[in-house]
Length: 126
Image (cartoon, rainbow, N blue to C red; front, side, top):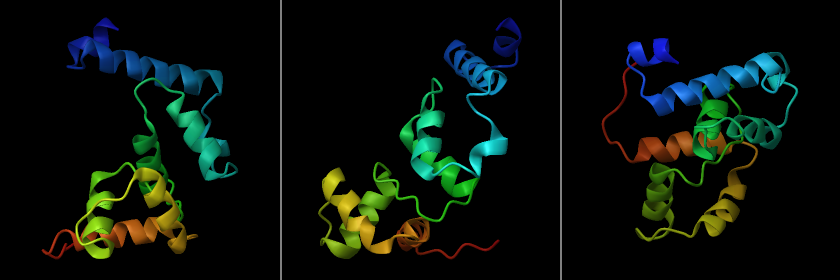
């Protein structure tokens, strides 16, 4: 823990990192099996790690695992974009947003990416 603190991590972040390492060491998290797990079971395993919440797990599934059907209803950008384009600026309750997003299944990740981009008028050049 001292070494992690010396490289600039807060005590809390060092604890989170150690817990993540324990999950890998024990086999509770095994990258070799992630492709065999459905979205929800993998999210559940990730949020079992201290410091990883559902939003973080969903972002991991979208951007690292490239899962096509993730709809991160707790994401403020997603909430704002749906409100802007479908509700004259009024946000939906989380449960309502979850149901609303079913229309884009099994490609809710793609819908989310487009909704995020709709909030930023400046084109991204990669």
